[in-house]
Each structure stands twice: as structure tokens, then as C-alpha cells.
Length: 116
Image 1 (cartoon, rainbow, N blue to C red):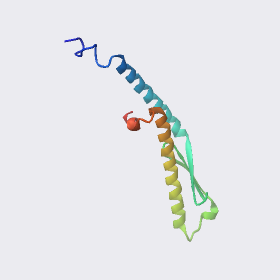
Image 2: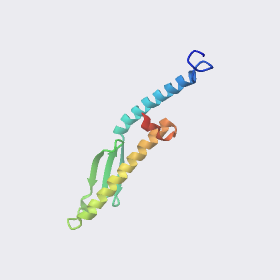
Image 3: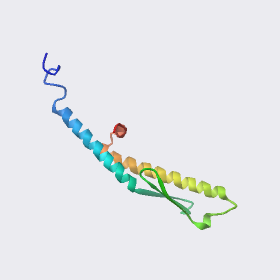
Image 4: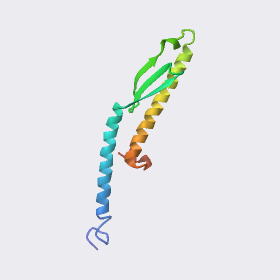
């Protein structure tokens, strides 16, 4: 039997080494982008700008701004709904930003991000 157990000098030869180098580079790029995304933020509003929420790429809410005119003690439920809407939209935008940046690295190879 040939050395290495496979005819033709081994499994994949140099191509396997290249694939591993590319995977390692992709992993380093993804780690770098994840760190950068912690510092980047997105904003979302609700109620025509009455509520503004800022969130990071790590999906942490950093700021909630409420215009005083939207605060109505007789309608706290509306204020709660506006805050929820703005927070959920900010988190959706943060996901979108992260997915967009990661797909630039993975070249649209789908779920590879979960491997690293």
C-alpha cells in the first residue's frame, strides 16, 4: 500500500492545506468583525420619532430616548407599546447589520458562521 494509505500521494494534497488556511483566515476575520460590531450601533424609532432606541451589533440596548410629549399618565400602555416596537426594531436592525457583515466574510456560505 502507498505511504499515507491512499493512492496518489495522500488525501487532497495541497488543496486541503489551502482550505485550512482559508478557514483560519475566515475565522480571524469573523472574530475581528464581531469585535467591531460591538462598537457599531443602529437606531430605530416608533411613534413618528417619539421613541428612539439605539442598540449595538452585540444586541445590547445602549439608549432609549422618550420625547416628553408622548408621556401620558392616562395612557401608559401606549408608551409601553411604542417602547417595545422601537426596541424590537433596533434589535432586528442589529441582526441585519451582523448578518450583512458576516456574509461579506463567508461569501454567502450560509451557516458557516456557527462553525467558528
